[in-house]
Length: 150
Image (tube, rainbow, N blue to C red):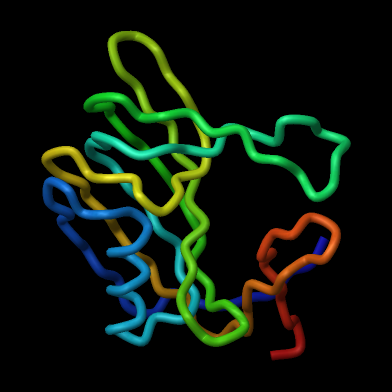
């Protein structure tokens, strides 16, 4: 386990509108507002796109993702961590539970997921930490790396 300690900086409340792309619009907002590291919560509706629901085979590296389509309006509750990539661009890693008609699917929201009607986002900026997403050679994922000395 790797850890570091920070404190809450600014807090932003955002209303996403019908058709807004997730995570794109949140990452763009973070870039425009110079947010480096943050905790993100999301509630509202998702209307289309795909979510990653796990690797096809748990023991295969790099893992091949399984994706499920979001076909129609779903309720959503999600939580994520925002951190810069190696070039300083904010990257949001967000997992969410999506429900419709008594069925629920849970996974990682990927680019191309669209808001249905409304999404409500709260961003809690975390200051005083040095964190970045760096490509892991084994998995191929951009994993969160922490510098506890910062």
